[in-house]
Image (cartoon, rainbow, N blue to C red; front, top):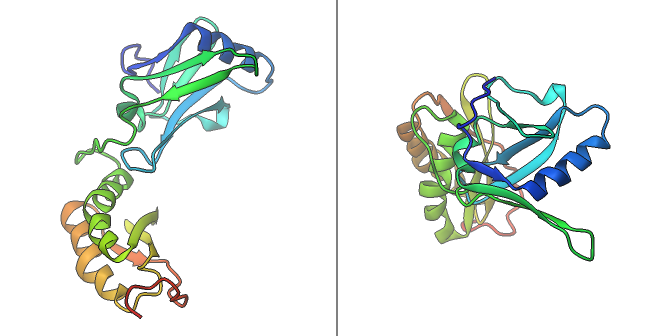
Length: 200
């Protein structure tokens, strides 16, 4: 774990620090807050803040000390948290914590990025725009130990009679070409439901 002070370009305002410290004081087993982004670099990216417990720690985490608590930033999320901020404003209803990360959805992917990020980048920026013409989309479910990408087809792709061709000739070919280290692609979708299928 890294304790670099300058590695995370995200601001937690004083009001947010006070509010988070107040919340943390009411918890017994937490060691700080954890800031992370789910599906970073994709249109579905969500910026999250949660209580951090011992079991949540990761070797790639970057730790930052604030006056009243510690913040643990998910290492993989750090590039996407750039220029972000966490603020708290009180109002008559009690108050609101705001988290903004303007770069969360921007693709910041290189050959050194995790395999998952590289695959998502190709799916969202190259594969899905093509499938969208048929009302379809594909998303990554998991990566197996032997570096096989397990995909889920949706929209017009689900139940489509041409999905095997799309998978082999389009999606797999593109992913293997663009993502070094990936061994292959597998479809997890149940194609027996043909209600929305583009080709039946």
